[in-house]
Length: 354
Ligand SMILES: C=CC1=C(C)c2cc3[nH]c(cc4nc(cc5[nH]c(cc1n2)c(C)c5CCC(=O)O)C(CCC(=O)O)=C4C)c(C)c3C=C
Ligand SMILES: [Fe+2]
Ligand SMILES: [Fe+2]
Image (cartoon, rainbow, N blue to C red):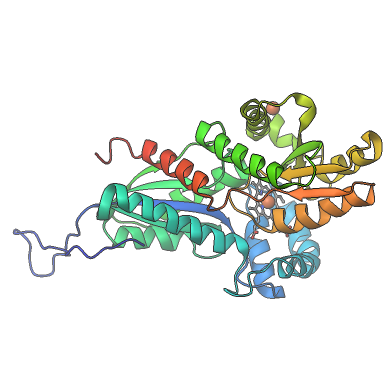
């Protein structure tokens, strides 16, 4: 967290045991999904159990879902997912790439915010599942004197299983505080021109570096059950709009860009087309040999991009006859991304700072 060195004071009217009053600060709390503490069975199981027990993620009644989750899914999935995480783990820091990148983003945003607002603001991050928990970071910010907190779920698009559950957890954390800070949550930024521009620049860089220009760009978004769309979740529409804005910013036509959805889980229908099938279909039916894939719904590279896209989906394309597969990394701590996120934060601080 940023410098908290300003001295606490005791008011003149105060009895001796009156708590010290800290100078009022504004907390900027970035939030991402969370990640296991290690790739071993029990940490994996704890993480997956917390994640998949969240009703915003899997909305079946607990009496029906918990026996399936605890007795079937959590006996096999921790080992399978643990192996996938091992293939992408950041061994130097002994943590997942999502955690490493979130720390880098936080440091870069903190530098920008401190430059703009000095020690009036504290910048930190938390996770929805696992560590550092949302509850612990809210408590730290309040203890450091934050009377206002801006909570920023690092997802460009709104979805019940991501932004909404992060916000739920933030508001739950406020319940524990005697002096509840004034709270704001940041809106989805999927149509922010600076975010679209940062995405477009990353694609232009990848295309400029490719031996041959890819024939198609696949925008692969994390999927959700198709039913969530019918029940009112706007995620699908926001993803479609991101692809359209990106296409317009790149000056492309419809034939050059495809929207698809990945990471299907369980037997229900999810948003379609499924990326893993779509890349194979493009190779098999349309004779496409050379594609690039980007993942605009992820603010940081993680298991779903580094392992699922760059290993499983790549394999599906190549087995169907594709020859050139370029994975375009997430925006991570790319300066254009940090500028875009910082501009979103600055807009949301209006009225709180000069
Ligand atoms: C079971 C249902 C799931 C829904 C619905 C879902 C939506 C969703 N998730 C993200 C972003 C991420 N998901 C990540 C991992 C991950 N997701 C699910 C399941 C659902 N996600 C699982 C079981 C896992 C764990 C990995 C595995 O076992 O397969 C991650 C990566 C975390 C990491 O540590 O790297 C992210 C990020 C979005 C954006 C989304 C809906 C919009
Ligand atoms: Fe997910
Ligand atoms: Fe839609």
